[in-house]
Length: 261
Image (cartoon, rainbow, N blue to C red; front, side, top):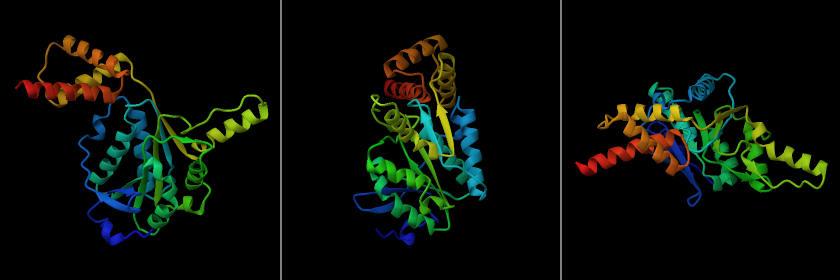
């Protein structure tokens, strides 16, 4: 595996992805259309991620971060918005996306990035690894343990719906085996210096987010009670009260309005 710094052109690109089919890194033209201020109800999570990223860029002590919790609560979007936030400030932050299935290529990718005088976030979305999988041990080592994990220009920002990323049916017939199984299960997430949890909103928070996006995108307003009733019906169909659900509801209103007009 040989990566070419000139081909990637770090002067023009900040977003990259590893594609296993080609065994190579590629630049992406990415336009994040949402600002960090548009992410509501997760102020503490935003503060932690912004501060950690700021410290990383300033060569201060910073952490690999696991963002875990309910689906649709803005975990991945927050990471993308943080990258946008700092690059809007001309801080030259780079992000490399690795797909779940390509974790085996992490050593070579990190080795290459380690030799580039830039700051990189390695982003893996919606990660879940069986604790008996060989990738489990490899990823643990890449986070903490290997010489490669000491790369000062690289941090991991990982999202998962699982608090400990990993899953396994633990044998309960023996107390010692059960304890060892549980310890192994949490041994991966334990290597992250910071965990950020995301939890479903309540009805009031959800409707406040709906109202925010209604105003932001100047949607033709009906009676607010009607809007809220429709938004709640939408959330029942989606099965949660998340920021994603609120945004998708308003987006659907915009599409329907455009069709009618």
